[in-house]
Image 1 (cartoon, rainbow, N blue to C red):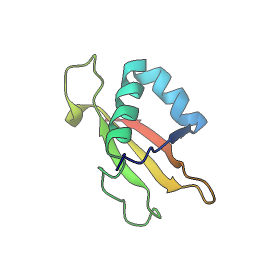
Image 2 (image 1 turned 120 degrees about the horizontal axis):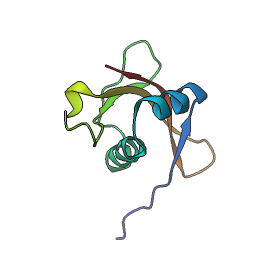
Image 3 (image 1 turned 90 degrees about the vertical axis):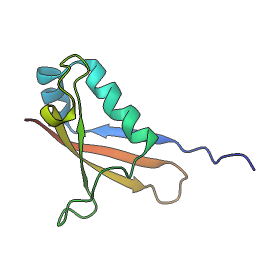
Image 4 (image 1 turned 30 degrees about the vertical axis):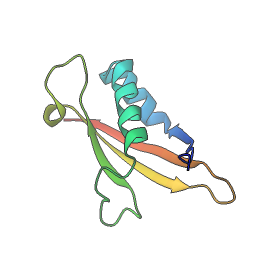
Length: 95
């Protein structure tokens, strides 16, 4: 039986896009999205945020790994009436 094809849509908030441009390289966003496509439920659900998850991604240019890089909050939701799942990246902060 062939694998079911899943389509993901990434929706960024304006503040996320602005902060990402200020703090990170385009490769950071590519790494974040690649990790979420590979395993969208990888990161833990944050209590009290209605299913939002907190993730971490390393800036590939920093060489410091995930512990010293970027954290972000995202929401994985299934669009009603359609097959695709949406991954909405809600917030980002540098540590």
